[in-house]
Length: 223
Image 1: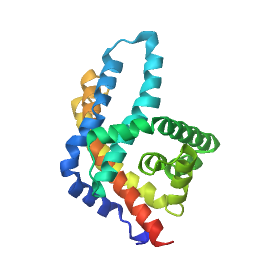
Image 2: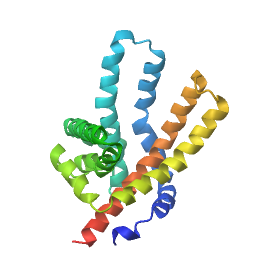
Image 3: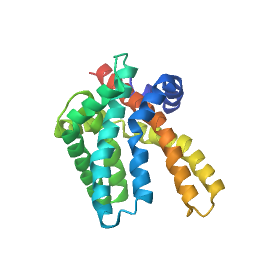
Image 4: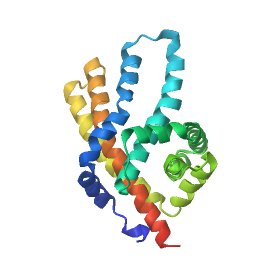
């Protein structure tokens, strides 16, 4: 298989085909997000809000993302996996996941400081770094290198694939939210957006794991 044969639309169809039984476990893995969003929205955290957001973005997000990636990849490759095993793997790799998250953020920001286009380019080249961290038990540096190599000459494929899933998922969500409140300022608008984003999370996760699989298969075929 070559990179040119990877179709974003085919990936989307394959995602809907494969989502089925994986949807509920992935929702369960990601469910702590709702607690953190609720606390942040209604908890009146005051000065503790800064520490809360640091923990959320730099610990909770990498942990849950890593668990979802591991679960989807193992299940899609016909390897037995449970929600507990996915959390255990993400927890074992948590320090490396946090390191990858921070390094990708810094490298992406450096690209955006240079110019917007380099920032977008770097971000997409590094977007699969955490996949190698939890799937292959790679170090943070090796994970970043792996993603950079995997997306070599495939940046445009990754970019247009991402645009497709954003259009399919977020345009309907935005439309529904704007129907509820065109100003986008009400609590109902925010709650609806958060809930719909949460429900769409497994779909996006499976989509990008499938894209990662196809990129790996393409890379192996060209070696």
